[in-house]
Image (tube, rainbow, N blue to C red; front, side, top):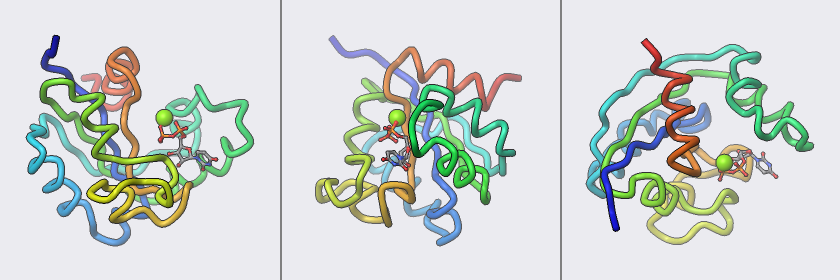
Length: 136
Ligand code: UDP
Ligand code: MG
């Protein structure tokens, strides 16, 4: 069974800083994702801490939140059939060294922390993450 889903995607500071946002958006569109919502923002550290709360016990949590709030990011709602899994596949492995050819992280990721994109890991978390950035 397949169904239309939405996923939250974030183009992280390392990629926005290198002006890669348009190229990354083209990769999504090329794979058939519709970009339903889209905004460039900068978040405060406490907002990053809230967004990544699931990782609060991890050793990398503090650096991760400092990093996500360090510069402009582009947040997007992506839509297509099985968007959550499709986005995870297009992003590639968390560590760009392990990412497959043709993935965003293989192409643009610098390191495990500066890995250019975030993507929701489940339909349930996608709803929470979309609400976090786009609740009107
Ligand atoms: N991260 C890190 N060091 C690690 C693992 C993760 O800096 O050892 C960062 C990395 O930027 C990653 C984010 O924390 O994208 C969230 O980690 P997660 O395991 O959820 O990876 P993702 O879902 O982004 O692939
Ligand atoms: Mg994750």
